[in-house]
Structure formats: structure tokens, C-alpha cells
Length: 210
Image (cartoon, rainbow, N blue to C red):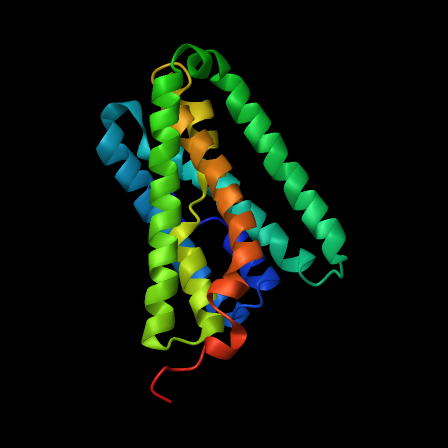
């Protein structure tokens, strides 16, 4: 039920995608998420998930960070510092999230493995399919980066946070899929950084019939 991650803008920036398209798509998705995320979660979880409470957390963990990020974009920060800060934040989120369900993972390695495989399939297969389909259709490479990022990178950090603050006592096992998704998505980002240019070279971004 959570929207795409704000990290899609980071991916668009580092992979030299269309920043204007990325910001436009990101903004529309997050405006819709203010209604859809609480609504879908409430419909799926029933009375265990108050849509009002979920809306409060969506505003807290989405609207406020995005608002703060606007003036920060005007500040010149070296790319190395940005990368280090992002890696530290992600590492901290994974460490905290895994810590909450460490015992469950140890006691149920088979379930954890199945969820890991499911996340690998959910993230890698659609993104690679989109990549080759968009390339085949002759979509501009810069825009293709944005479409792939928006279509693949969920806000697993928000999902994990909601599980911790809202379902840690009623549905404690709900956290594990979000944690594994967070880990796999970051693995996917590293993979895309290393292999995207090889799979979709810049000189191959023009329509095939041109």
C-alpha cells in the first residue's frame, strides 16, 4: 500500500534520468498516497489499522521529509557526502528493522528464505522486463530510468516503520516482508548502478525504427 520511495529521485539523479519527469511523477504518486495508503491498509487490515492513524504517520514520514528536502536541494552537497549519508541511513533502518524480528528469522529460516525469494522475484523480474520492453519500444533512455524507478522502488522504509509503530504487538510478523524488501531494493539499486549502462547503453536509447 505504500508509494514509491523518495530514493527514486536519488536513483534518477545518479543514473542521469529525466529529473523533471521524475519529480512530476513522484509528486503525483505521493499526493495519491495520502489517500490510497491509509485506505488500502485499512481495507486489508480491518479494525487493526486505523486509517486516521496511518494518515498521521504518512504525513509524518512522507510529507515532512519531502518538505524539508525542498530547501536542502538548493544546498550544494558533494556527491560523496550524499552517497555516504544515504548508505548510513539505509544501514541504520535495516539494522533497526532486522533487530525487531531477529528471533523470528532465526527460528523460521525457511519462511525468511521464501520471503527473500519472493522479494527478489517481485523487484528484479518486473524491473528487468520493463527495461527491455521500454528499450524495445524506443522509449527515451532518460525517461525509461524514471519509469523503472517509479515502478519498482517501493517505500519499504515507510512500510517497516508502520509495522513497527502500529503492528508490533498485534501483527509482529508483518515487519519481516518489509525488512527483506528494504534489503533487496538496495541490492537492486547497486545492481542497476553497475549494469544499467551495459543493458541499456546511451547510444541505444533512440527508437529502433529511426
